[in-house]
Image (cartoon, rainbow, N blue to C red; front, side, top):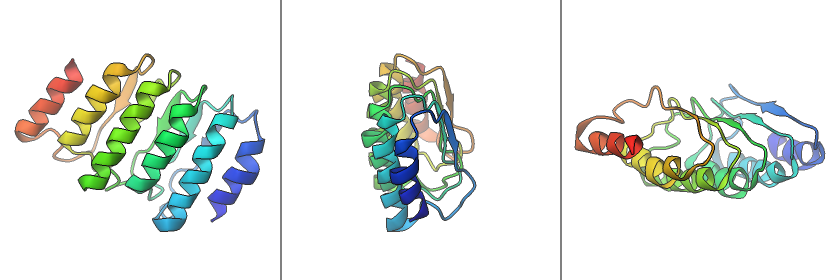
Length: 169
């Protein structure tokens, strides 16, 4: 609830804000309240024309929260150059995680300012990486750094090999 208020009443009305780091608050973005906070933050992002860096690592973000943040915020930002989501373990697992990867890929393709994306230790699967690679990385005009460390098992087996091939192209 606190972040939703901060986003709606603070961040949205602070056009000179250049960086916002909220990492290592493990319960801040969990559950329905966390998704609500992601939505409020997403709505505030386009208004922050100078916001270049956003750090939401280790905040308990869900796949649903990421999908909202990506489609309503990141995709519409004209200034965001660095997004860190590291340590939101499990965020990209399963069908919901796959859907969040698709939303993030579409945002990556739409956001011409995003240069750095950190997704270390988020539970990304090979399938999620393939979607991110083909629908996001390949279509991004600005991405120069992608961190995927700590996503255990992501590159194993035939799916992992296919994801590596997609990323290499």
